[in-house]
Amino acid sequence: MSATSIKVPFPVFQDRDGQPLENGYIWIGEPNLNPQTNPVPIYYDKEMTIAAVQPLRTLNGYISRAGTPAQVFIFGVTFSILVQDSKGSMVYNFPNGMNVDASYDFLASAVADQFSGTGSQTVFTLTGSPGSQAALKVSVDGLTFVPNVDYTWSGGTTLTFIAAPILGAQILVQYAIAVQQNSNVFTTLLVSQPVAASNDVGTLRVSRIAGYTGGTPGFVNSAIRADTAVSAGATAFEWAITGVMDNSALAGENVGGYFQGLRRSTGPTWGAVTEVIDYSGGDPTTGAVSLEVDVSANGTDATNNRLGIDIVVRKQVSSGAACVAGFGIRMQNVSDATSGFTVGIDLSQCTYFQAAIKLAQTQPIAFNQAASRQLSHNGSEFLFRNPAGPVNYWKLKDDFTLLANDVQLIGTRKTGWGVATNGSKAALNGSTATLAQTSAAVAQLIIDLTAHGLIGA
Image (cartoon, rainbow, N blue to C red; front, side, top):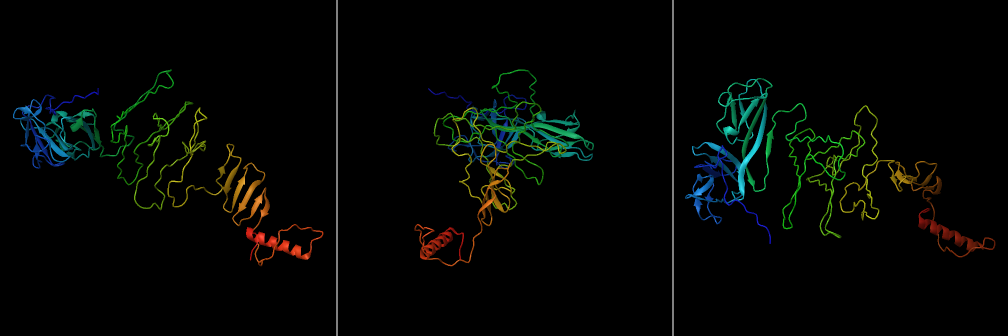
């Protein structure tokens, strides 16, 4: 027998004091517009045949239809909503939401706007509209300001100070706006920073200090951990952690996700680890990918500024010793010599406009673990050699001269030869061969050397 989740059948609207909204007003309109002046048709049934009249009224926190709790429906996906108390004062507004459904509630989202005083500015524009005066807190240089004494706010996004905050004063405005939320609890935190900071700033910062001694290897302690379990029937994309950098800046270094490991002692340290564990058994029919890197764009890249992976090695302190890192990329078996990759690196499934692999002059490819068998090109010749010397195993020059142990085997092609005919590969006795037999053997040598390309016309 499968389990069934019991959900609240009707959305509940709360007043500013947290109590069910009694005799309140609810306006629903076009998204990002005033719902009082831009209402949308509302219905009491999913078939949208029973029209509801705005504003909707509430009874004990529920939308009321003739004294009975009711659900409401709209045609479309998004909408704006304004909730007022029995006197018509705003409880909260929400400029862009989703369908009003029985599995959804409207909760508060914390917002913090930061400004810097100019000495003359008294009017400031907030990121959103606070849900109520009770949810609005204004402080200047850490001192809490009193509404209607130090500042005024009568709804909307305009905050007006009675006296202009002094030059450089740090103004913090904290408030809550309505956020639609389903039965899975989540929290939205929105912070607007209109003034550049002089040091690092974090909207949300978690500091964990592992000051203990001991512990059990294999147990993982995390400052932040996100666990997502996906059912067999789910078809949507479920991502445990998502970082999106929507960047319109013209400078700086703007990153969707940044990880850093600071090693200060001898303990193993990683900046980031990705791991996929496949419990499905052998020969999977769908992807099991530990790390995917995508580059999406339109148009060419003449300056080579679009990169899939960029690996950089550098000094930590510019005046210190050079940084030598053992490997840029390393593939290995860990405590299991029987496991392995079918192909180490597969470059066969992509289009390359210049080269699949690009090396600078003299950069070698090594063919053993000790790197004592190396192949490179120095700008005029290929070298297969032991860098410890004393001689090169093989050398192939760009003019096709071939050397072994620095002794020439084949040089450049010799030209000026005519076409030989009537050659013979018959056995030849140097003591008894006739002139005709010798001539036929020489002709055959010319034919064969020409075929090899060593000589020619």
